[in-house]
Structures are given as structure tokens and as C-alpha cells.
Length: 309
Image (cartoon, rainbow, N blue to C red; front, side, top):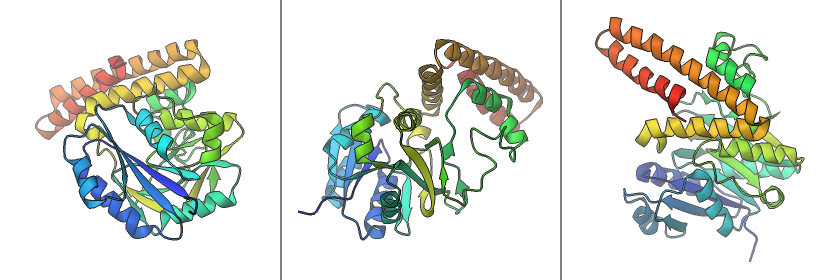
């Protein structure tokens, strides 16, 4: 029996329609490589698992009795995967123009690369930025002040989110987002699986950091693309996801830079959140209608930033 080139691992939580369309796109667009698809369902209650069983019986389905989070569920999929590459793919994506075989071919040509990320697009075809520098106290401060937005063309101030880059070239990057993340099996065997103490967010950054520290590279490849809707699962409980994001960010900074850095990062988030809270409370008082509703949303986000960890 021929070896499987890539194991596509999709973690799903109540994303039935997105998942159906994602699976359809995989089978329609993938050719020239041997692949398997593994779905890890995190206790969905929308019929996702039954849809997979009925309409995609060739898929390997793992159904959890509870939501174990993104990292742990991906690790479950990796344990049963047989491919020489592991493709972590979000259910709210659509594979386009043979992206899987193109990214596998690119990875085969770059033997020192542990991770490949590709061009992510919104539904309208516009660029969705999916490459980042590692989180740090300094990068967090720049982001909190908004200097990356004030000077998007600056290599220095736009460093964390690479705001100056047009994504038109192949590039070594610190990390890529986990919505489409092709990972070399041999690199995983050396570095280990995802850190399951991250429930959601931060796990792919942590993983990329470990790959870098073990001599591997992470590459962005513009020659393949995927549509990413974004927020299919996280939008179902936005407040909890914002808290999870903050906790993961702080965990990564403390893990990488130490306890003092973690304390400084918490202080930056708290001060920034409080300043935003005061600002949006004032805006809410003087605004009306839609402006007040927008202010209430921003107030909730500010409270999460200041106190949600």
C-alpha cells in the first residue's frame, strides 16, 4: 500500500455547514497526492458528526464527549494520522486551486522547513494576514498603543503583524496561523505535539517557537491559497474566546520571557483596557442609537482586556 502524503486534520465545534463545504472543497480540489481526512468533533450539538458519517463515510471521525480545545483535539488527530505531512485546517475554510498538493510540493522542496503557511483570503478575495512575529512584552506594548496601525509601513512598529509586507513573496516567518498549517511529520516527531495547556489560541505560536528552537524554519508560500471565513466557532461565545486569547497570549510571553515579563504583560493589558474602557464609556454617553450599541461592544472588549485573565 502506498504511503499517505498528507493527513488533513480538522477540529470542529458546531460548524456543520462550514465543515460540509470545507470537506467538499478538499475532495474537489485535491489531486496528485494521497491524503486522508480526520475530523475531531469537540462535542458538537448541531449534527456535525452525523453529517460526516452520512455524507463523508471515508473520513476518519473522532467524536469527543466534551470540548477538549484546539490543541488537545489536534493532538488526538495526529495520534491516528498516517501522513508524512499533517495539515491542520479550520472547518471554516475552502481549499482553492489545488492548495494541498501545491503546499506539499513546496514543503518537499524545502527540507529544513517544519511548517508551511499559504495565502489566506477573505470571501471577497482580499488578503487575510496570517503570519506574525512571536508575542513579547515589547510587541504587546506596540499593539496596545496602536503604533502598528499608526505606522503600518514601518518595519519596526509593524513588526509583530508584518503590516508593511504585501504577502507576495516566499518568506521565513516566526509563525503562521493555525487555520491552514502544513507540518512535517519528522519535525513533530522531534519537537513533540501541541502544548495542551493552551485551550484555544497561542498553541500554534508556541509550536512554531519550539520548531525554531530546534533548528527548523517556518515558511510562508504565496503560490497556494485558501478562503478563511474566520470565527465560525469562536463567535459562538465571543466573550469566552477573548478571555481565552488573552490567557494564551500571557502564557506564551511568560513561558518564553519569564515571570517578570508575564507581570509586565498583564500590566500593559490592564492599563490599556482601563483607558479604552473610560474612552468608550464617554463615547457611549454622548452617542445615540447605533453609536451607543457600538460603544457597548467596545466596553465589553475593554473589560476583557483589563480584567479577563
